[in-house]
Length: 74
Image (cartoon, rainbow, N blue to C red; front, top):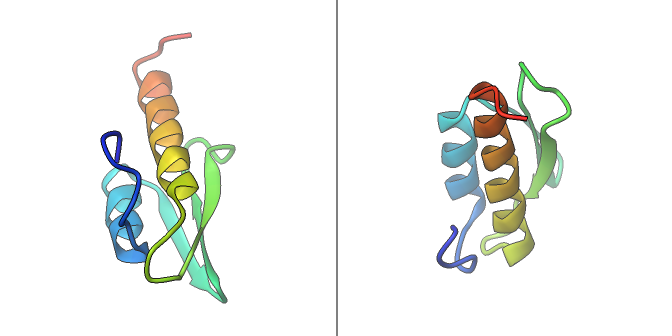
């Protein structure tokens, strides 16, 4: 996702977020994503076939922040 932000679908995001310990709440037109340890790390993902690149940017930002917090860096 860092190299190309295009061509990702909801299943890709489900797999990615789960791999980093995020909880997924499915329902309606969006998937709600939040981390149980850091509830402020949250977002939504639409259920369209191909998603806007903004979803990939958000995923990279949230995961980077999660890794930073877990490493104890300020």
